Image 1 (tube, helix red, strand yellow):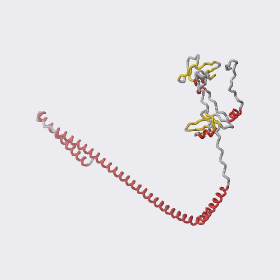
Image 2 (tube, helix red, strand yellow):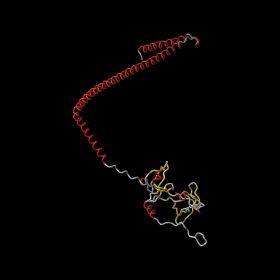
Image 3 (cartoon, rainbow, N blue to C red):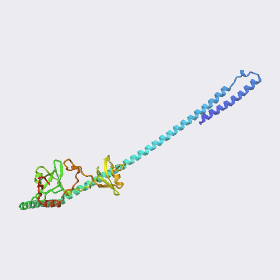
Image 4 (tube, rainbow, N blue to C red):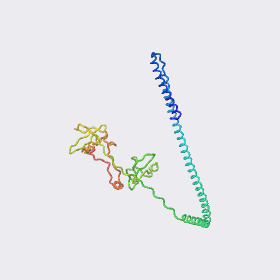
Length: 325
C-alpha cells in the first residue's frame, strides 16, 4: 500500500474516533435533558459513510497495486522478448557470416580446380600429339588389312545353306492363329497328319502352316486329377458302389443315402475302381469326349508302325449263300 493511502486511512481512523467520542457525548447530553429518542440527532450515518470511504479507498489501492504489478510483469516480458530477439538476430548473423565464409572457400577451391583442369588438359594435348599420329597410321593399316581380307573372303566358296528343319511328332505348327500338334509322321515318305489331313511338310508350308514350337521345347504338364463320372465304380475295403448321380459337386453312390463331394469320399478311403463304359452313338462310334487321351507317338513307335508292310485284305469271307461270315 502506498504511503498516501496509509496517511489517508490513518486520518480517517482519527476522524472516526473523534466522531465516536462526539456520539457518546451527545448520547449523555440527550439522556440528561430527557429528550425523547425519536428527537435525537444521530451522527451514525456519518460514521457509516466514513467506514465505506475507508473500504473503497482500500479496494482502490489494491486494484492500483495489481495494475502496477501487471505493468511491471509486461515490461519484464517485453524486455525478455527483446533480449531473445536480439539473441536470435545475433545467431542468424553468425550463421550468415559462416555461410559467406564457406562460400568464399568453395569459390576459391572451384577456381583452383579450374586452373588444375586447364593445366591437365594442356599437358594431355601435348602428350597425345604423337599418339594421335600413330593412331592415324594404325587406322590406315587396318583399312588396308580389311581390303585384303575382303578380297580373300571373296575367293572362298559360299557356305552351304542349312538344311530345312523336318517337322517331328509332337511339334506344334500354326496357321492364322490356330495351333495344332503333329500326331503322326511317316519316316521315309515325310508325310504328316495335321487337322486329320495327311500330306507332305512342303504342302502344309505352301498353304501357310509354319513351325510354332518344337516338341523338345514343350514342358510336360502334370495330368489333372480324374473327376468321377456317372456310371463309374468306386471301391472301399472290397466294397464297390456305382455312381448314380453327380449334382453341384455332390456324388451320389448306389446304396448310400448321404452324398459327399469327391475329395470327401477320397479322404474316407474310397477310390476309383473302374470307369464307366463309354457312351455309344447310334452308329456305335465312340464320342470324342468319351475317347481316352492318347499321348503322341514317339519317333521309335512311328518307325515301327511305318515298318509294317503286310497288306490287309479288304475282302471278307462269305458262306455258301453269299452272306458275310
